[in-house]
Image (tube, rainbow over all chains, first blue to last red; front, side, top):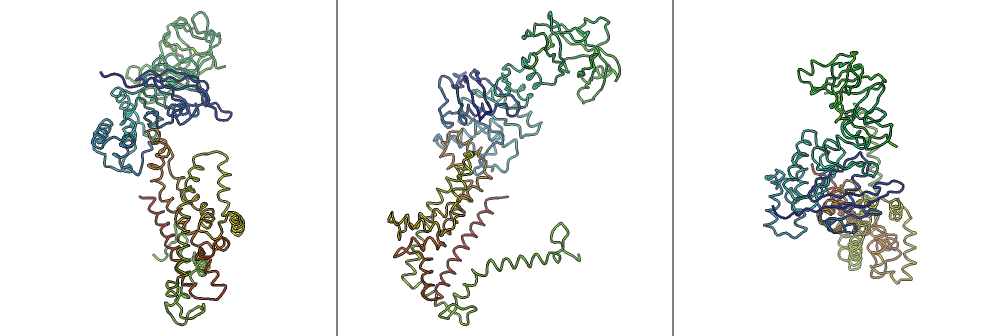
Length: 360
Length: 271
């Protein structure tokens, strides 16, 4: 393989305020060369602001942004050499597909034969090889997104920024494009920073996900770790479905009413009162084993909801809290689903037990 | 079908008759004063009369044959073209700046730039006259162009602003991220897409200057008197149907410009 062209990004101490609002609050992160990092957060969390800081459209109040060894904070957007894909595609309607993709090459004075070759290659990459002569108005939403992508990568930028590029597409197409962009990332030697509010999209595509809340990183981790070991209630709530139960933590175990759940590792917070995070698909309805130390919660089935690929069993615990248990709708598990009103035991593997501190 | 409906609210054309009559009346009131000079310009009489008893083209011959009228026409056209060339870029830049800035100041700035529309023109004319007296700009084309530019900028500002409203500024951001400087992004991406609004604004600026009388009365004169000023003087001395012929020509130019603006407006929204 040729030498790496992609650049690492170092963000340190970036703060941006709009009046009284802190859009970014002392944000720091190192993004490795060639990494696919997703900024995940609800709207207004500051994720797009951070992307705009990287692109050069927003100048932060403090802090530093480096691409490789080069400080970028005062470099205007057009000299940063980053590719960018926007949410609404922002194709140039007065140009056809070829001219759109050729635009960054024209700016760089690339000669016609080379331009044609590179545009053709970029269009092939996004599987639009035959559509160069088409007008932008003749394209479907998915095709427009591909053109926008081709335009952003045709000049081989070392960093690619994407701002919710798939949010305007329908679900099926979105999932297909997620896989395609992920494959493209493997083919192209680029560091990608991707913004989304869709947690599934973030988990699907990223090497690492930075969950951002109120201008700060709540947690930066790989998708699996983020899902299995969220560090705060916000992260646990934002990623995946969960039931939250206030519990007491002592001696490597969680106490809830009369039930005890063992933990495989000590929680990172030392507090006694914490929150137990229960993911519906990690729970299992089990036969009554008699003993209370079998890592079970006891309760009564309060509701059943058939959702096609699975059944959601709502269980009311002795303390009155309601939790959800997801049971796959295979024949044998379906047959074992209890009826409403039936007392049940809900088992949780100690490995899957998540405890997060109460929000301050 | 016994009744034809005017709209899907099920009101018949007959039920709307009063509205049509009222609309027609409004149109007549709006258009009659301008249109009435057209038949008068083709009269054979030596004074303005309506309706004319005899028809002739002698007043057009008089207009095009007279050196003074031709010179005044040339002055007016020169002033109008220069006004257009100055007001269009300045007004476009102002509209762009106000559109992009989004600061609270922008609303105040916009009001200030639209002031010439609200202030009585006679005040602008008097002000310009006294200012020019100090600067030595009275009776010069430069003076007329500067004053007319002030009057024309609001029209360019309004038309270009409305064009920018339907334009997606993200495109300019994309262009900049792809390597275009701000100016280049504007010229290659934004301007081609708002060009119809800019051209419409330019035409408005042209007409504004060409038809303007009051400022011209004060600051133009001598060999740099505009057509409208000379017409006004001519009216004061004697009632001459040449004025009607010239007016007809001016109306023609204005109407053609306005039709052009309308046609551009339609071309702007394809499909």
